[in-house]
Length: 87
Image (cartoon, rainbow, N blue to C red; front, side):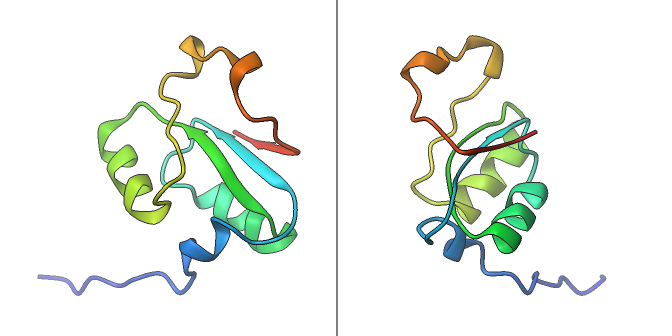
């Protein structure tokens, strides 16, 4: 069985660091979002992900960050505003 490797980036540091507030659409496993946060700083405020497998990974990587679910059903007027939107 192949060895499993963990990534070198600690995703928890992107939950509450200083910098822009980030929102994410169609997040997947947050590769783009974590990359943006690594370059710009900031924190991921919320994400929209419907795939159950990706959502499970996100829940582990970004504890306490809400998954808004299907972006087509979100009332964005009631969502915390962000300064950077990834998709």
